[in-house]
Image (cartoon, rainbow, N blue to C red; front, top):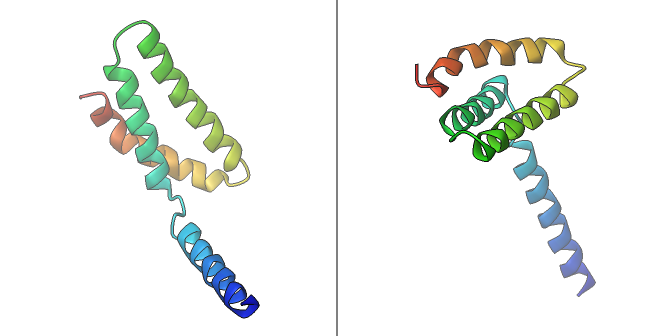
Length: 92
């Protein structure tokens, strides 16, 4: 019984590691998420809805800046990717 539980635990651990490693963020994926949030803010009705959407976008920005503060090159690449999708997110 203990061998079965150990084997099961090992399989679950491997599956978890594989699934987590495949979700690595790229500059393009970070920029796309930002552009999606920017689009929601742009399309939101004035007032509380727009304020909430703006806050979500700002929170995401802060989180990414904090997460990647040591990787200036990555942040520059994110900025370039955002430029590519920003106009589309605002309907231009």
